[in-house]
Length: 267
Image (cartoon, rainbow, N blue to C red; front, top):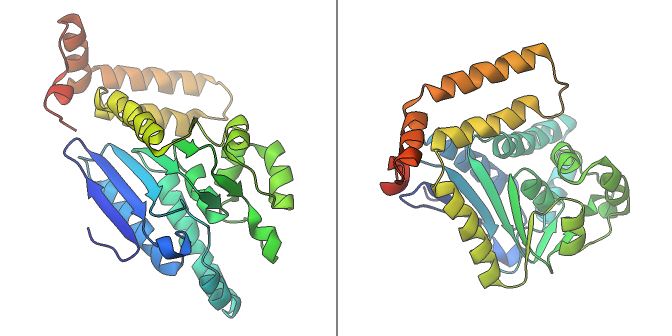
């Protein structure tokens, strides 16, 4: 895949790396980057060989959010044009958030506005402790509307009540304390080590099992325990036990050997 605003690569173990590549504007995204992100996320989702998506930014920042030139153009749009523009952004975020693959954001420099929205859609966030975060839309008379469903789940409503309205900046330690970030690092080497440690775990796991484990969260999180949920969970474990992957994993464990997906790099 070749893109104008992104870099893409995927290794033989199924690790896909998507890099925002507009470093001259701190990877601020416009309508072109949004379309390319939507395209690459959709392509990755259809690729059965892909297991993990690593999202990062080229240059000095992860992403400074929305491109001001794009925002200026949008201010002259009709209401229907603005709706269509916002809906495409919403669909891109939904594509990332709803991915069946494991998604990891490696964040540095700045993650502002929509950039913070992107990382909020990811399963795991590794960030340099000096990263600057902000929901700065209110500073220019806007609101973080499209990203808000994902940011609310990532940082919680109590924190959002403050930062949505103040637009103030905060650093990595604060982001970690509120649950927006999972791992804090201090150097590029530390970040690579943290990422590789997670990827090592992933490569050892059953690919289908990981996807089904993620689906449990999507389907059960925030819902009350019920008889239907208990029955559904029993159906799911019964179904996955019968799969060749589970039989191979159990046999490998009992025989004290590596499962075939780990030995061969199968995905």
